[in-house]
View 1 (spheres, rainbow, N blue to C red):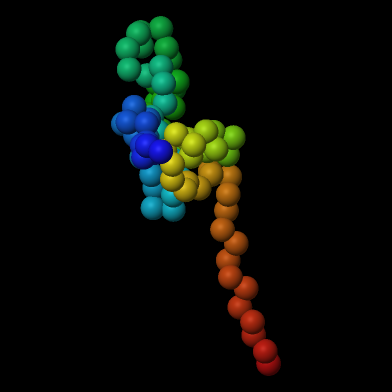
View 2 (cartoon, rainbow, N blue to C red):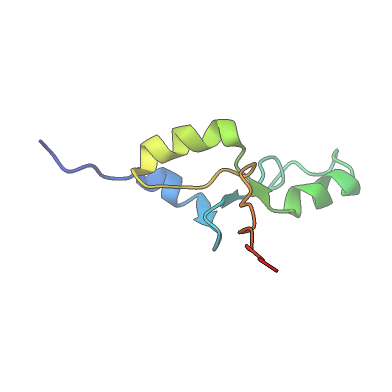
Length: 82
């Protein structure tokens, strides 16, 4: 069976944060900007993170574990016995 290889086109478009979330650049902000408002163009510059529904698809294409944007880590409960 051949070795599983990640999609190179996807790897060029995304970055992983330290916590494992998927960060990517928004679309529609590179050209044809004259009819778009400044507020809209500024919003395109903000980083975007993959939603939980997209993480499953990305994971299948990369063959690696990734964390969804909606997943939050619960703090460890400290057992304090008095």
